[in-house]
Amino acid sequence: MNRPDYSPLEPIAALSTPWGQSALALVRVSGAGSLGLLEALFEPPGALRAAPGHTAVHGRLRDPAGGEPVDEVLVIVYRAPRSFTGEESVEICTHGSPLIVGRVLDILSRAGFRPAGPGEFTLRAFLNRKLDLTQAEAVNEIVRARTDRARALALHRLAGSVEGRIRELKQRLLELEAAVEVRLDYPEEDLPGELAPEAELDGLEAGLAGLASTYRIGRLYQEGVTAVLAGRTNSGKSTLFNRLLREERAIVSEAPGTTRDYLEGGIELEGVPVRLFDTAGYGEAGDPVEREGQRRTDALVEGAQLVLYLVDAAAGLRQEDRLFLERRAEQPSPAGPGLLALWAKADLPGVPSAPAGFLTVSAATGRGIGELAREMGARILAGVGPASGEE
Image 1 (tube, helix red, strand yellow):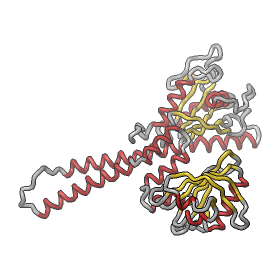
Image 2 (cartoon, one colour; image 1 turned 135 degrees about the horizontal axis):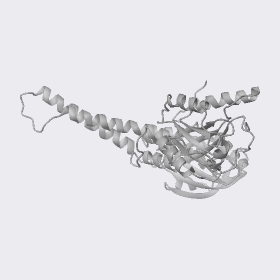
Image 3 (tube, one colour; image 1 turned 135 degrees about the vertical axis):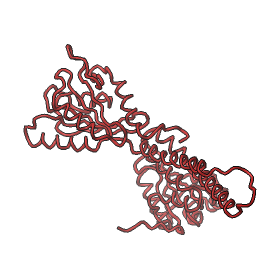
Image 4 (cartoon, helix red, strand yellow; image 1 turned 120 degrees about the vertical axis):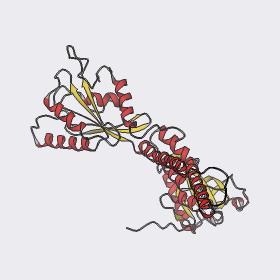
């Protein structure tokens, strides 16, 4: 597999906004000589070279092959080193027609701009010491954030919070090393101050452990978790799936075995993105399709961080339910206690009270759904510790 050419010496160009029809689009260029190359395509002549940094210039881009105007644009000039990449950079705001954007990228390529590789602008910012490694990673996390909490944590890292803590711990370690070396080299000297290396090392170890926990927290909020609804056929999984999604995604029927393959939806709990799966119910598999559906349910349950096992309160707790719950309880999830037992269809008349350890819910009426969501959030956060805004 060929690796992208990330030569830092060439000027690069890329579309920074999503491809597709829109009111406006933004094309970014960066690299030594960018203004000179772009000047040959821009009118009025000389306007870009004369523009101070961080200013906008209105004009037109022309195709140098025939002088035809391509678009009326607004160009923002950034002079090195006061730019995101630390290089001479320009942002070109065009109209958002894919035809126009394609023409702009084409004339930039012919003018000498190489198409930028994935993440290359951030790479150049890192190489030019405009960002440290943790901040470069934070840029990617902001772009990929699926919840507001993930965005806030990534923005905190972009501000340098993690790098600042790394520098602090490094400085403390260097100072401890220097103090120990001085006392070893000059044991006869009466040096001021008490030295307690073990206590200091314990403090450093605690600081490093706290720093490592920010990785687990960040990963949880970025990648999210998988939650699977499981249970016997007709236990109310699809109704609960729809209730949690707040939309009618799954077909609901009194006939058992309506769901023969899994359905997937997305929700957010405690700021964590959750992939929620409705699955084929367990029971007698009458044909190969039902057997395959149950096999897929088993695979999803095996890989889930959280399993919601539903028992139809009207049908009662059966031996196969007990066996599933016992087996799953012996396989703790890496995200904490990964099993919630639900006493479902609690709205039906005459149903008995839930057994110990079960949450009582009715997806049809909404009873217990708020408590269920709170308990799911608590289970998801278990094992990573509190996710403070300060990390």
